[in-house]
Length: 518
Image (cartoon, rainbow, N blue to C red; front, side, top):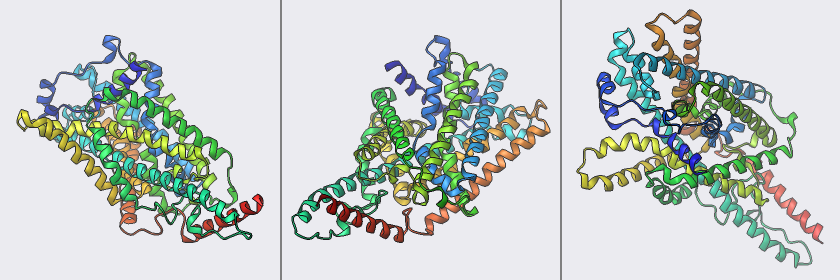
């Protein structure tokens, strides 16, 4: 376990730019000053095929997976799975493009490996067009900006996810305790005493009760702040190997339990609309592209493999498994819960079973640990250049202070947008679309433009992919921001009428239980 987890920590390291590299404006000086990164396979410590496959799976399975049933809802039960498969194929193709361009540039420049921003910068620097050469440094900074924005966006998403799930766990415990203390009193009377609906389950799908621990969601975010700050004070990822292993196990167990639950009942498919309004499709795009979040680890994994020639096969197999899992969970989850589906399928699990509460606790623990992993990249890109300008005696304290301020920044984004579905859609539309769909095809055109290897089909294909990504970026950002500013309805997935019917059903179920005990 120790060796596997150590490699798991090292996978994140190649994403980070050296402070010197991030501050230099001239790409030629970057190329001369920085020592080229070394392949792990040179010393026999690289990733095996199976390890690379596992890392690919873990890099794409997160909170985005749990939001895919809502994505299918926003696209329709027919168009949703089809578009999800197409998006998976296009994303995998863009990953291959990135790997091929990196190989091509490594051969030209006699470098063993390159990161994402290296590939962009050197492709522009060695282009035959002067406009690209002059802006190579800007290209590196743009990619680093979107990498930082994406990782901090993931962290904000995790905060909202933690708050919503812990809120349901706490309220579910209080709710079940209320039921346990209420029914014995009701049974002592000669006639059944109606139990106030506020003391019962407010929504059998997991909505919050109306009394007791019904605290505002933002308070739960604030409660998590001290724990998150302490967590990010661990500057060495190798110190988190055991936590990461436990987090992976918890998330895997949670996914298995979720599948077992939704497979128990597919619901009534006749009440599921076959299509969704066109205006909802940008929400599907943002959530779906957020789920395919693994392009940032593609080059680090390929660079650290013992046999990089086998990486394309590992990429195809790993992303094939991910796509099948996405389509299956998204479709079955939507069929099970219907239009009441929430931003995360865990929020739809009812409170009446301890396994459902266990899923929320286990997955929340996994997301809590993942916060530090995602936070590692932006912290190491942003903080070293700032701390380098300070006196040596102040650097340690200031670094801790800046880490805490970065966590507060991600918390402020979560507080401003306390809806998990909107946070996921916004992060996916703004940053994930750029890294996964827009940059790779443009990089390929720049890389091969000076060698006249750009055919008309390649040009048309790459411009089409980049255009789709850019349109998704614009429309997804617009509709999400519009929904944030002017919500179209109740922030919850079920409206007031659905909640009233659910409360009535809970009261009826309580009386039935009382009659059964009699």
